[in-house]
Amino acid sequence: MAYKEVTALYRNQRDDIIKLHVGEQVIETTDNHPFWVEGKGWVFADELQVGDKLQKANGINLTIDKVEFIKLDEKVTVYNFTVADFHTYYVTDLGIWVHNTDGCLRPEAKYLGSGKHGVNWKEGPATAKMSINGRAPTPQGQWSKADLEYAATKASTLEKGQAAWFDLPPGSTSVVHMPDGTTVPATKMWLRNNGTGTFHGYPAP
Image (cartoon, rainbow, N blue to C red):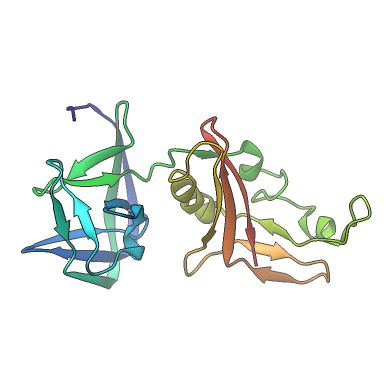
């Protein structure tokens, strides 16, 4: 453990927070902040459960007694930051180990533009209807900007070269173009850590 310089500070507006009750202290966080849980590894705040054990800077574990999902009447400013050399740090007076949400991994550049699965991909519906090399047409997912940010935090929990399926959060705005011409909401996503600071993936029905 070492002191490191804060290299960037991020501000966002949210109308929902999560309160984690640990002993006599309450930790306020947002759903996409990963916490280190004994026996599970990095777990996002909205997936934490009563009984999960969070790790302190001194190695001692603290048990979550209660998890509250709070809907606010108006939006508040929430913060995230990065520190030099590391993507993890300790927060609160208790020194709880957490992971930042700055998108440690970046989406492949095409996803931010008009490339395949990209936010401005015009050919998505047509591509879904195409038969490639004699294979049946396949659904084609298209990212939204908000879901790309969420995907970055999930992909950052994968080892280099590792791939996995994840559920998309409620309110996801990514879509999937189907071979029959319809467009349906995406409910999950496949992600791979490319090992180069970027991730590959697509949303799926």
